[in-house]
Image 1 (cartoon, rainbow, N blue to C red):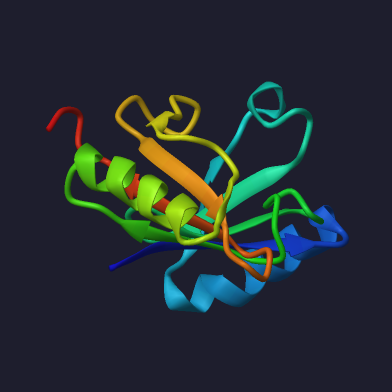
Image 2 (image 1 turned 180 degrees about the vertical axis):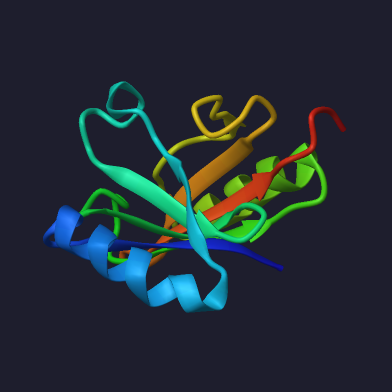
Length: 128
């Protein structure tokens, strides 16, 4: 299942203004902005209804050409995804672990596919 996507944008403030306005009629709003100290100073914000599923970040902040996250139902699936992707020729872009700056149970791993796209597996459950 698709968890979220992230687009790199060239002008963060312009894009925030655009998405704030464009998404409002759909009931989608800005729900979470990641603190700059958790992103190395890169501006990142997420839009959604109940939880963020559409993210924008300053250009190249996704550490790949495009970022997509797939939802795992257990942390062990995240670990297995990372190992399988590396074995299949992917490049490590962040090993399995907690990413507490999103929320306390956010357990994810990142790989770059052969074309440089940042693929993530994430489990939101606190413990398996």
